[in-house]
Amino acid sequence: MFRNQYDTDVTTWSPAGRLFQVEYAMEAVKQGAAAVGLRSASHVVLATVNKAASDLSSYQKKVFKIDDHIGVAIAGLTADGRVLSRYLRNECINHAFVYESPLPVSRLVVRLADKAQLKRQHISGLTLIILQEQVCTQRSWKRPYGVGLLVAGLDETGAHLYYNCPSGNYFEYQAFAIGSRSQAAKTFLERRFESFNNYSRDELIKDAIFAIKETLQGEKLTSAICTLAVVGKDEAFHLIDQKIIEELIDSMEIKEDAPADQAPVTDEDGSTGAAPMDI
Amino acid sequence: MALRRDWVYENNGGTCVAIAGSDYCVIAADTRLSVGYSIYTREFSKICNLADKCVLATSGFQGDMKALQKNLAARHLIYQHQHNKQMSCPAMAQLLSNTLYYKRFFPYYTFNILGGLDSDGKGCVFTYDAVGSYERVGYSAQGTGAGLIIPVLDNQLKSPSPLLLPAKDAVTPLSEAEAVDLVKDVFASATERDIYTGDKVEIVVINASGIRQELMELRKD
Image 1 (cartoon, one colour):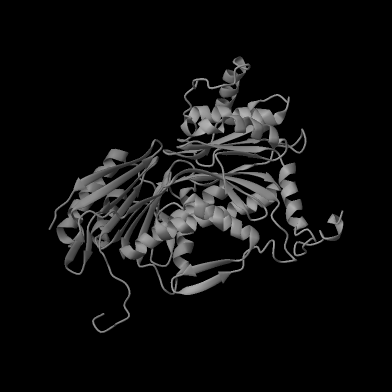
Image 2 (cartoon, one colour; image 1 turned 120 degrees about the vertical axis):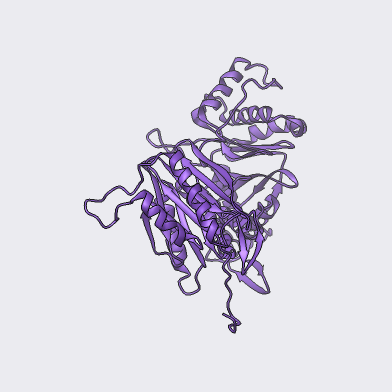
């Protein structure tokens, strides 16, 4: 009712106490192609639907390696996602340079959330440097980021999956789905998430593919339409080869009516030996 | 430098050598870290694997060596994120030169040799001064023992001048095993007369199958 009056810029509150621009940004996430993340005690899996703008074009990249131990899947304005990935990569590299150790996932998501929301303060040595970063929800000439990120990572404290939203909020999840028709995936995950912690790597990957299948709602699930990535205790973050996804989908389709806990069929050697960033 | 109170560098000694072959590259450095007439440690690696086909050997001030290695490794990570592949040796060579010149007025006290395979799979060696002047050569030596080693390599490898036209291949016709033997010989010789060189020599060989490493004992005096 009052929505149109108070939604012109991000610094205007509505009488109901809402910032509509931020909520519209979150809408952008809901319109993007689906992405799901699942976490066990030792691994985290990300899967996305590859949506191409048209039959003539290729699909947009939605999964980014941030560091050996962290990767993200995005939904929404993929351009914003690319920019944020660059920022996250720099943060990881700088932290590793100074501390010779990988940046803990929880620290990274806080920085990302701050960046989405307000300016950040760095304490470097004895000087206080206040960095004006993208002050997205508190400056009228800026707009919020239109992308939601599923951050999957491993650090000393274990495996983590976070969701960062354009509002600057972030939450930790056992499993989550974002993007269009993600509710179907969420329903599927809600039924099974309690056992995820004990899942093996392969079971986790299978369930990720199933979750993506749910979002397709009838469309055929092929390896071309799905991007899969995994990070684990002794496994750097990497995208899984299309051929292996193909094999997994085939092995699942044979037992289509029994999608419950099957023993892992193929042992994936993944692409850990190949060049980094291999898609 | 007895009276200067602002001398921030230290020479930790040591020698590096590299030889380029038709399909391999040998990079070697001793493992002694010294200061003055003392030895800090006998087991210090001066060699850093920057990329799949690219290895850096550095002599000089090891504090700057460490900082330089970290800098290049971080830049390489960024490159991989942006280009989806490893940096080639010539690309890394230019990057190293730029990085060194960036600190033209407060230099890295490092004498570097970069070795690896170029995009054609041929061995390449790049040799640097402290501020980034570099050149692709067939072989090189840097560090405290370089003066003892280069004449021997000149004699054995007869590399043509890079100024010749038409350009003559700088890589040596020696086989990989012969090149490694030559490196062992020159290090043994340099160890005899250079007090800063000795303990062990770390030899790294890059070829099409990857990077392999070996250690050879040297005189400990």
